[in-house]
Image (cartoon, rainbow, N blue to C red; front, side, top):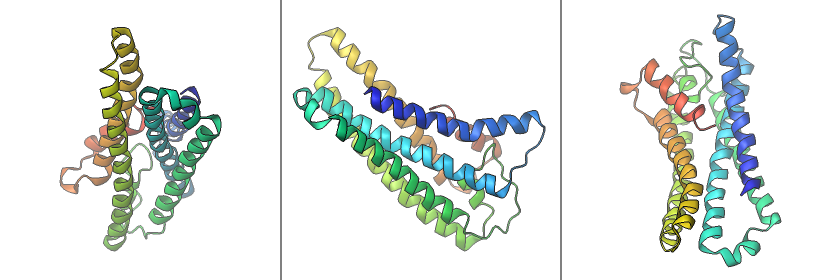
Length: 225
């Protein structure tokens, strides 16, 4: 558990360091400028850290499932080699997802100006600046990623259904409290990341506004870390 928490902490540190310091610097220097390469780097790094974090949260759900529902097999299923492989798979999946989205986003011609209405370079805001045909292509890539993330969410939910079923059978109230206190924060972060992230990327333009976009971006990019 602590090995995965170390990886999660590094991902959180990376994701929040990608967006917040630049925003604070712009505020202090009274500017809203960012270079084209800086914007591309920000999108790549943020997508990388957030995608890897969500993959890692899925791995952590499996780790909790094995620890609580199959404790006698924990040493076999979650040995050090398996943990390293799972963490490496999470980081690799984040890198590939970030590479796909960054390459696809910045291969589109931007024909609607260069003003990003957000405190950091966010894919939906960049897509707004593209032409209609390119917009549909990015929507397709985003839907595929959302489906994969939703599949991870279903896996996490099923894991926790079995976890909570096992925990409720624990005769000790202290044991139940310990298990719930270990699992509920994890579920809260997963739910917040997925719900706000899906809303930010899939909400219809009719309900979009600068204030709403800002609140949603803070909820999925700043609050979880």
